[in-house]
Length: 441
Ligand code: AMP
Image (cartoon, rainbow, N blue to C red; front, side, top):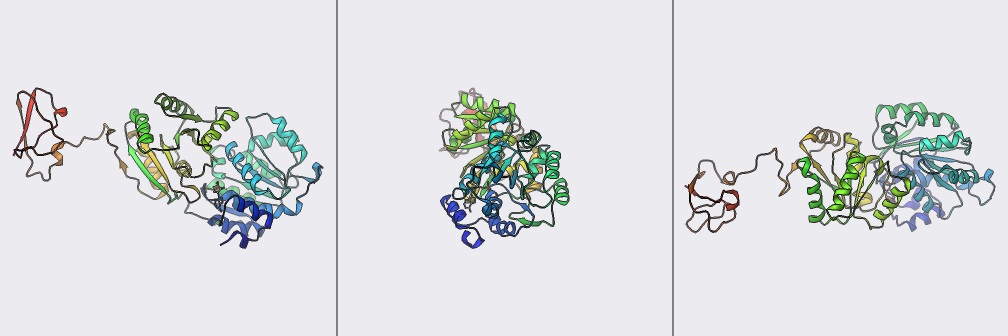
């Protein structure tokens, strides 16, 4: 299918062509006609599927008739409101809207917390048709009367599951209660917990459902590997993997801000170019680190789940779960950072024995088995090491090990290599030097 067959105007088609999109993604193919028809939409789409354009392009088509170049704020009321759980996702959506509206005089702005409200207030007072906001800051602006929402025609709730996880559901209900009843509502979520279904039942009108991948499915384009390792060896193993796999760029996920900071510091000490982003950093610092990563100046980005929400880094080759997340849905989101928009990716999870429960939960949710593997040089301490004798073909023909006090091995050979006399030798490194050992058949 072509974008031109979806009923979008030339101004929009030209802008997306300039973005290099040649064909609509499956969610775009399904959602664009539905949104254009004015129906409410419940969409199960994971990150990286092109969901932002799936809701934004038909919204622009709908708002096109209001596009104008007047300087009067009254001519630019908010007509589309997009609510995002995080600042990063809000920024990402804002950037996309900017490129999609290149040939349409529609105004858009993004507001989120953690930064000065004044410049946002000034921009809102000048008037915008499309407002992208995080819930808390939006409520602040509503309270300060810097914004009116009585002309909103379309509401988008993006990553609703994450809003639930972050405790925003009451704020969302409050905001939805303030909007005109006559409106179109589009809800995007990777998963549909009962609370999200309730939200849809309370605030949506006969929504159409669109699903592009099985619920909680992981992307086929992503190779998933689990390496079991002792907790204290994880950092060493990570550095080893970054170097041996020649990872040009990687996002490494940690569960907490403290462990993210610690890991970034340790990796730096190890000579790897790494920075951490998390909610305790200022917005300016987060955006700077992110920009450095996007430009390829930074090799390792260590992130917490919340900070990584909405990160869109095209063709990221590697994602590493330094710690497995407590919620298996976060695993799906994390590995969705790689293998985006058709590119291949590798997701590596480092699993310590304390994390078997999380591993099982991930396997259950994603309906796949992810067998743990061992990495050479990082053998898990809780597993018996394979003894050289175990490599013998059959138990019945197992050689008898005899150690004779003597002068030590002269020429050690790799394990299992036959000596000229047809006898096997144990590598010298495994033996106290004063013993001479032979395998006797
Ligand atoms: P999203 O799922 O909205 O975060 O989009 C993921 C990435 O796919 C973004 O970098 C988009 O710019 C890109 N994208 C969206 N639609 C298309 C398309 N039809 N063709 C190629 N890339 C796309």
